[in-house]
Every structure is written in structure tokens, then in C-alpha cells.
Length: 128
Image (cartoon, rainbow, N blue to C red; front, side, top):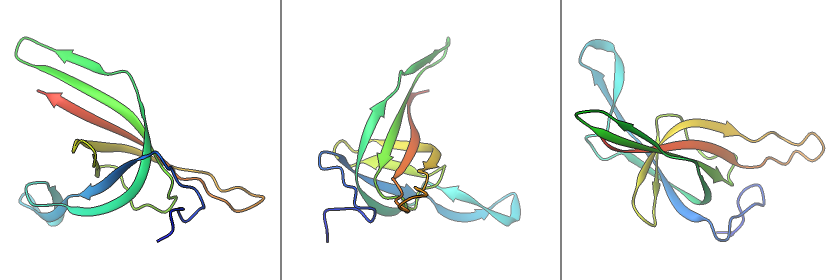
């Protein structure tokens, strides 16, 4: 396998990540729809290496709980990576899972047809 991505772009010092997608099961309240089931092992898809840009964390504190939300941008070099909001991205180096909030595909160059990768907004919540 080539070290370069499909678009000729590769992050040599990026962090390996895996996309996790919940399996679907029938909705117990509506037999015509399905819901995500994170209680069974999810579908896994290695995405290669990506880079991370951390954003400021938020602290939600009340009398009964304390919750910390960390947000980040994950830069995937593959413009065709199968990632959707609601998926989880596992950082393979430390095993933490981040929920995908938003997926922004890169614009295609009108001159060359080159497409950069995708930018994912992800969040990790602890406490609660």
C-alpha cells in the first residue's frame, strides 16, 4: 500500500485513528425505524493518520455533577473517508473515543480537480 493517500496527501507524523459506527437495531417504540446500538461491538474502519487541533474545554458544574467537554478538529487526508456525524473516532495511541459532531469536506480545486481531506469537529465528554 502506498504511503500517500488517494489525493497524494499524507500526514507522516499524524496519529492513527479508527472510525467506529454503531450497529443498528429496531427502535422498540417505532417498528418502522432503527436506533444506534453502542452496546454491541461497532463497525470499525481504520482511517490512517490524521492530525488534531485542540480547542478550549468547557466545564459544566452543578450540585450533583461535573462534566468536562473537550472539542477538537481532526484533519483526515482522505477526502472519501466514510465518516458521518454520530460516528466515533478512536485515537489509536491512547484509546479515547471522540464523537463526530460535524464533517466538512474540502472544496475541489476548479483548476486541477485536487481535493483536500476532510475536517471533523469532534468532542469527548467525561464526567456526568
